[in-house]
Image (cartoon, rainbow, N blue to C red; front, side, top):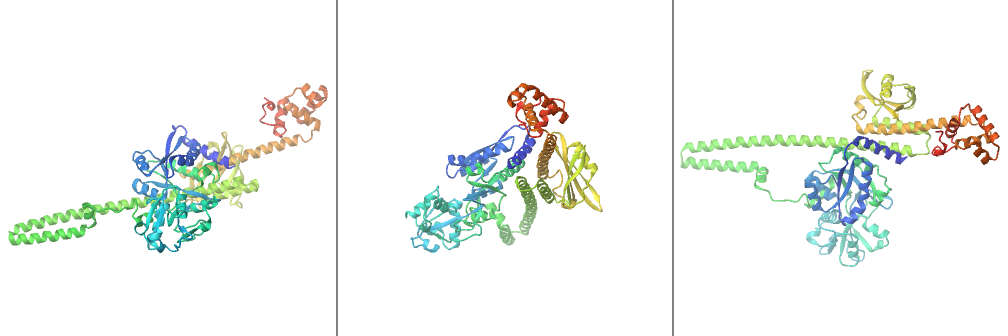
Length: 613
C-alpha cells in the first residue's frame, strides 16, 4: 500500500510538470572524505529524486569549500548538502535557505543532532581540562565543526584555549585515525564527532575502557558519548535561484523516503526531517570568530558610520575654534561664512541620517514579513506531512475493518482542514448517496445537494461561501473520479475564520484530497468487484460438481471433444451439461459463461485463453 501512495504522489507531480522539457538539477555535496565516497553515498539519492519528480534529472556534485563558492557564483548549483558550519557560511554569503535536516543512523536509532567528544587515554593521568595545558590535541582541522570547533568552544568555557595553550595536531579524515593516535601515544588527547568511538567499539576495534571522556555530559534521548551541547545534523538547503515549487517537491519526496530503504542505507542515514534551528551554530561561530564572523578593521566610511555623532562633534568644535581664531585674526565676515558652512553640513547630515533610518526600517519590515511567511509555509508543510503520514499508516494497517479505516481517514481529513462536518457520498445515477461522515454521529444528509451534483457533473472540485445563522461558512465538494466516471464525492464545510486550509488556494491540501480520492476510488472498485464476485458465486451455487468442471473447461476455451477427453465422458454428455448450464444460468453463449466464471473467481482473469473475446 505504501508503494501505491508513493506512485499516486509521483503521478500528481508528473501531471503538474507534464509538457516541460527535463532540466538537470545539481546538488552540491561536501566531499570531506573524497569524491568517490561522496558519489557512492549520495548518488542513489539523486536517482531516487529523478524517479519521483518528473521533468527533472538530479545530479550529485562532490565539492570542496572553494568548489561550492565557484559553482554558486556561476549559478551552477540548485541545492547544497553540507555540514552545519559550512551551511551557515553559505547562508550568510549567498542566501542559502535550509529545507530539511538529515536524520543520521546509529544502530537502530535515528538521530537529528550531534556533538563532539573530548577524550584521553584512560591511563594518561589527565582527569580535568586544566590538565591539558601544554599537551598535544589531535583534531581534524582548524575549520572542522564537529572535529574541532565544538571542542574548542567547550574547552574555552572550561578555562583553556586549545589554540594558545595546547599543541594542536591536524590529522584530517578519517576521524578514527585521531582515536588511534591517542591510543598509540602520538597525541595526549583528541576530539572527534559523536558516534566515531561507538562505531569503533561496535566493530571490535576499541576497548570501551581504554578511553577517558573529558567534560562528559548526558542529553536525554541521546545514546552516544558526549562532551559538548548538541547541534542540528547536516541540512539540505536551496539557493535563491532555485524554484520554490521544485524545493517543495524535493522536501515532500525526501520526507516520504523510507528510513530502511536502499537509498537511506546507501547513505547510512535514517531519512529526513523538517529543518531544525541552526542559531546555535551561528552562536558557536560568532563566539569563536570563525567564518563568516571573522573580525576585520573598520574602513574610514565604516568608522564614520559607527562614530558619526562623535566625529560630527569634533568637527563642529574644530570649526568653531577655527571661526573664533579667524574672528580674532580676521574680520567678522569670515566667521559668518564658517557658520553658514557648518549649518549646511548639519542639514545634509540630518537628511542623510533620516534617509538611512527610513531605509533600515523598510528593510527590517521586509525581513519580518519574509520570516513570518517562511514560518507559515514550514508549518503548513509540516501539518500536511503529518496528515499524509497518518493516512498512510491507516491505509497499510491490516487489522482494521474497511469501515473503521474509512472513518479514521475521514476524521484525519476533518482535523487537518478544521471542518465542522465532512461527508462522503457514493454516486448513484449521477446523484450522491450518503456513505460516511465525520463526526460519525452527524445526520446522514447532503450538505449542499446542488453544489455536490455540480461537482459530480463537472468531475471537478467546486467551492463557495455562504452565510448560515449569521456565520460565514466555506464549502468544498471534491468528486472521486475514475476513468472519467464520478464514483464518490467528498463534502467539506467549515467556518471561514477557521478554514485557512480549505479551498483550491491550498495546493498541498488539494493534493491530499486528490490522494485520498484516488484511494477511495480504488476501494470503491474493490467493493464493486467483490459484489460481482459474490453475485456470480451465488448464481453458480446450484451447479453440480460435474457442471462446474464443464463450466471451467468452457471458460478455458476447450472444445466439446477436448472437454470429453479431459473429463473422461462422452461428447453428448458434455453437450447435455452445457445445455443445462445455459438453462440454469439463463445465459445465451459460451462468452457469457466464461465471463460469469471469471467473475466468480473460477478462472484466472489474466490468462488470455480464458477471454470470452
